[in-house]
Length: 438
Image 1: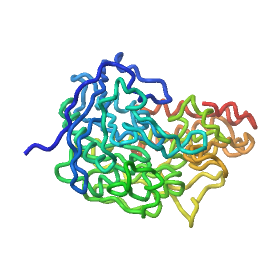
Image 2: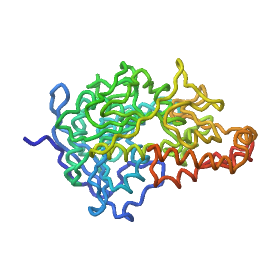
Image 3: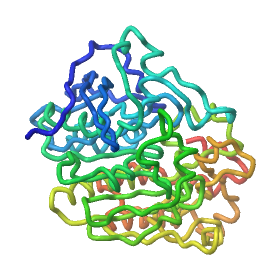
Image 4: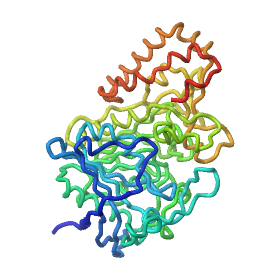
């Protein structure tokens, strides 16, 4: 008996409205193909009710001769009301060099039909989104989503269809923030022997799990965070959880759900990182209106290494390396003399610091700024006292980079990119924040 799978119908070229803040990748120049599809079928809710659906999925895949056979299916994030693909932004470099196909699935109703977002950029009330249907009825008028009670089956059915389309033999589920929360629920309550997913990358989950079915049409982060904390299965399927400082003690409050590694579970808590950061927002940072520069931590490199480790693990290779958790004392992180969090996955930006990287924003900052954390320059005088000279600082930064790669928390191909983020000029530019504009 064949399992239910979506029917894919390609849409004509046009604006898929899935644009990030960073410059887009020229996929055509790399020989990749990008096609948007309508994915339709009949889904079943956890309570057993069937409903028709027609959502969209954006598929990006390499030419056959470079394809790895792995497909990463991103549960598109809808916290702003409009859909976004944060994991494509963080992982694109690794996807491209590894030859992994990627698909972004409109799994939740607000992205398709519209509804309330969970986070406002301007600090006011969360916006109401028109969804794809309302924003472009000519292109998307035939879409229909029955509601988030059916989101899990929709996601799985679309994943099966794209797997068959691109000829993948391994499918990984990936998602960040609200999407990570839904993936966590999927793992706990939905994943079974017939699941299309051979591994999960859960990025920035809350300690709480969403209800299996929402009270109304859609899941919201307020409703998610009101639920009790819950752990994930550790013996089910290769699962890598990546958490930032904001996620463990901040708004996502995952500390009560912290659990040890298990046979099929690894958790990486990454020091000096925030739920979202400069890499994600890029040149649009000023539009957030945050009181301090947003977090400039190096989680992007950890995420790339995490995807590589998860894919190896899901194919029968070694498990990802174990990582120390953050050191927590009561309700706060233990910190060093500069205020940097102790424990967790270490990066050169925190082990050879010239600035204080935090997952938290100053008190009174808007919700969006709280999610983006902060970066505080350190006085040049204290840096010179710490490092002695720019040469000594660069030696320490280089050593920390090599240690990160050797430990498996960064890919060797990212060595030059990591080294390029060294900031020896900070030792001579006291009280001049211009160097932080990167």
